[in-house]
Length: 135
Image (cartoon, rainbow, N blue to C red; front, side):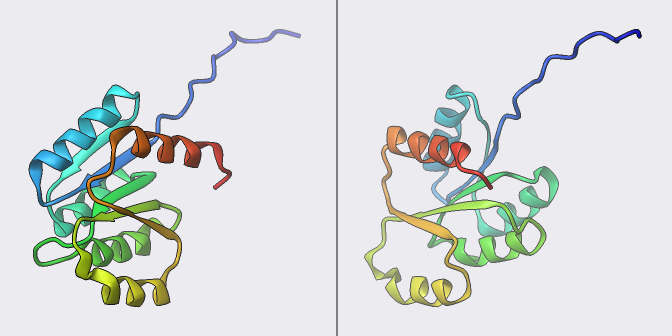
């Protein structure tokens, strides 16, 4: 019996979409994640996030909550319509989002919320711990 060449298994690099209307934050987080070996893309609005997710199918979306026309919760809800297994981390520096979060939790409780700013080491560890969990 002849066996063909062995093909090494290449680990799948998680695709991460970082969403924040503060460009410096989105760009910085994406750069940090890229330096840690992830495929990360920064976008700057909820609308851009939906378009980018449809194009690139991220495994994880990290999003600010309060942004322009479409907030992070609305963007994630739209993304989950076509990527239901996409993992979500939301963050905000605004204390006045309690009602918005309560409404979102009634619809979907499969996201986590963190205070902004989030330390890069904490963010990387959160993503790594999600990589180790079965999806």
